Image (cartoon, rainbow, N blue to C red; front, side, top):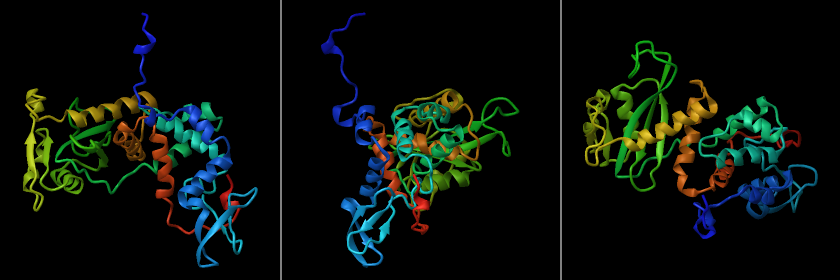
Length: 324
């Protein structure tokens, strides 16, 4: 079919685009990547010098990942405490992996990173594991006045047919999720040891603001949400068992849409995820979902998390610990 050129439009506004050309222009070398981390942690090179005991300007030390105090020469290390500390992998390769991870809508496998960057599969897998550790948002609380809550189960086939697994089923891992229906439309997804009433009510109390309207299905463990002391929830339910999925504004289609993204992403890209690492994959999909209105700016958001989640452990200020 022939389309007029004027009818072809970019679906992403110009201010929300971040292309591979932009990435290559901003981060052509390891030095440019190091400078970015330095600027995040110590804007304009200003940092508190431990020897001078005050804010001082710091300048790059040639051939090292250190910056020296302009007054006394004491070194600071921007990579200390970050996921890049002690890594022998090129810092630009780390940035490439983060860019590729942020530019996809359904995830990218470690094998693909291996092919794109030339690192080993073991290195690519470890890099992804470290990057995903940045994406958790454990303190986030949903602010919308209407919230949908639902649970899903990840893993192999249950022994006794379809439906919710029996208690003690080791094939399935329970995941509880909640999503704002309006406002910012954010989602929280967490693995759980069980889906008892105590667990589900505790999750809702932690993640959902008081006086919110909570939509769930007919699962018995949701009984009593409206009676949680001090929360004043309005609890409304849809009866899926009777094959009713929407009744006016009562439904859980939003959170089920998110489950669909997770299941198809894991099944299509990663194929299999163990219980041990499932939460990190949920963090990745939640992070991307919560910024779906940001266009292609997921990578800058991921990069900002590097300095936000600097380890609190003190690091020895040695050049060997900071090899890139």
